[in-house]
Length: 341
Ligand SMILES: [Fe+2]
Image (cartoon, rainbow, N blue to C red; front, side):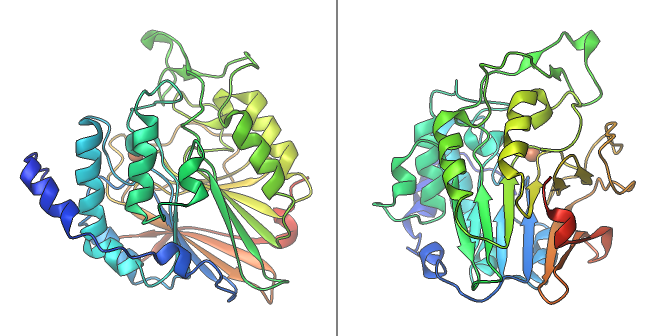
């Protein structure tokens, strides 16, 4: 997709946007979820991987962040990018089923950014405009885009929890380039006054975890389980990583994540299935070391994640699907294995 910087184009794109309201239309869907498709990092909205994604069985689609790349042109570029996504064949094709989303740095508006980003309020408004969140929605009034939604009848309830790893996040601890790890210059901090989620989001999370659910899916834009690799991950804030794990104890839960532009499956107290990027090739093509990886294969070309729930067998199967429709990584787990201990 070629970015066209003319304001006239932007106005035209923003003008004809329909008020779809698809989020609320599906909010009380009582049918059990069986197929969840999850993806991240879309630097274009016209790509064969996106067409492939629309062919997968799907009860829910999860945008896990970097849904647009809009960290270089301020709010006007963000509006234009969202308008292009909203009008794309891909997004229109997704709208027959529920869509949930969170953001990462590039759609938050600042590369590797956190609480210091001065336009985070404006960016949050654009995020909800993209998703047609009603003007009076409480999600627009709170700070941060975190939210949760449950699907399915009693006995087959899935609670999807979408975290905001940006709005409140403290600055990253960095080392000089000559001390960098393969994934970059970020390193774990031992300063326990720093945060990823922030106090308000932690309090909210404790509350939503009290709601009944047979399975909980936690969406985190950045990886939760892998060991620190120099890039962004929960392992850079070990006290926050421990806190989430202790909150999830006793729950049947898993994490879905994105961000890396390649895929891997890990377990570090809880399963973490990473799918990234939907439209980009990972330039290095090799993974960073990760002792928590549970499947040796990693995948570095455009892909999408595909999670199937077998309610009769009480198990899940997670796959990384490539442009040709083939599963490049597959993992099966019983609900009993998902119990966080
Ligand atoms: Fe990305």
